[in-house]
Picture 1 (cartoon, rainbow, N blue to C red):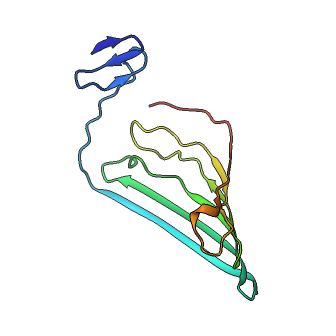
Picture 2: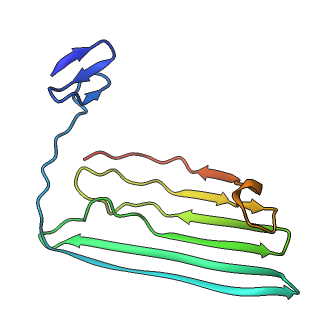
Picture 3: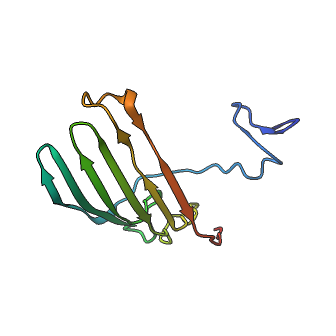
Length: 151
């Protein structure tokens, strides 16, 4: 490791800020694992009138993955649940999505817990040609405070 004014770099040029103690080297090896999960989406049209349509969607997914030699598989996303309102017409398309992402507390070695997260997003399109020129993306996020654990 060699020192730089703003951090530390190894011989290959990979740099970190600070003393370099945060630069972990991990050795991965293959082993058997068991994956279980489910994913679903349901849709219902609340209103249909001419070429206009108002829909509601519910969606969600969950994955659990464990190693055969005990422990959790790394980098598995937490469960997600959400709902979406969709308005489609000849002149305007609008979608509003609310997504609840759960806390991941069954993480693999050297991973960190994922905090609870919520997100609302919705693109709005205003041209009958459906080109991206008339699209306005909107996003709003809310996050709860969380504690962090280290392994």
